[in-house]
Every structure is written in C-alpha cells, then in structure tokens.
Image (cartoon, rainbow over the protein chains, first blue to last red):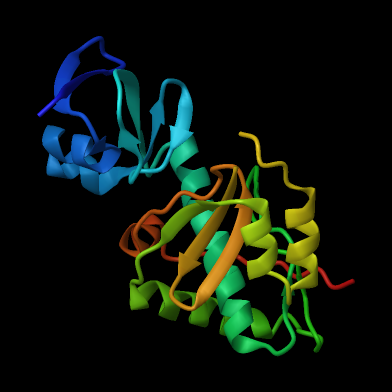
Length: 167
Length: 42
C-alpha cells in the first residue's frame, strides 16, 4: 500500500496509507483524540473528519473544546435547528443558517407565526433529532444538480443561483 | 464548490465546504443546552 507523510504541529511526522481519513489518523494516535476531535486543519484549511488524505500534508486536529471546534458544533447545531423547524411547522422556507461570533441562527420563513413559547418545543425536537443519531453526510454537487434538488424551495434556489461552482 | 448536507429526511445546501459532518453523539456531548433561544419576527 502506498504511503504518505503527515506532519503534525509539534514537528512530528508519520507515515500513513494513502486515502486515510482524518478520523482514522486521530484514531491511530489515540481513541481519546478521535472521540474529542471535531475537524482538522489540512494544509491550513479546515476540513471535516471524513476528509481523505491523498498526498503528503500538514495536519492539525481541531478539538471540540477549541474555538474552531465550537464553530463546527454550531454549524451542525444550526442544521439541527433548521431540521427541527421543518418537522414542527408547515410551509417552512429556509434561508441561511450561519455561525456567528457567539452562536448560530437560521432564517426561516413560515406560513404561521411562531412565538417565544415555541422555542422550548423546537429545542425538544432538536434533542430528539440528536438522539436519533443519523449519520451526517456531505456530498459535492454541481449548481445544476443543486438547483434541481431545491426547485420547490424559493429561498434555497435563490441562494444556489448565486453560488459559483469554483472553490 | 456546492455542498449538500443530508441528515435523516433533512437536506440542505451550502457554498463551499462549510458543513462539517460530525456525529450527533459529539453534538450532544458539546453542551446540555443547544441554544438559549432568541426569536426575531419580521
């Protein structure tokens, strides 16, 4: 099996099989590290734990408790919030859901008006979603494919139309 | 790059690689309270 060299922030280098994921690298160092990692910085770019390393690279694992780790958690939490709103209310059009300095939000257009009292219900559903423990999957698609997938969703379609396909 | 995020029945889209799949177990571990909610209504 072909090997690649991975350099770590402490100057250490290791030889790993080509095609190894960041999660597998973390596991090879220690199960504790894998358990507490949220993402990785590969050649100075943030990447998710399922990312595959095909060539020599520098790697810094991002821990859940770090500032970057909090951003990763918030990104996922924003998605869970949106999923919860979609489940609970009718006629939901989702806008954007970015991470901000001290948390996250998700813009949503609803057919009905929600109130502060609904927040507890939304959070309860978020916890239920988390306990369902689905695997999160990410895939890259062309703009044309994304437009086709979100053709019934006006706000998303508007976003997708503004995305460039470049990196 | 355009990324699609799938989680159960939920599908979302974003520009670039700004969605980082981590396990729900880790999301749960991150905090007892997922959000202290604020609601803006336009």
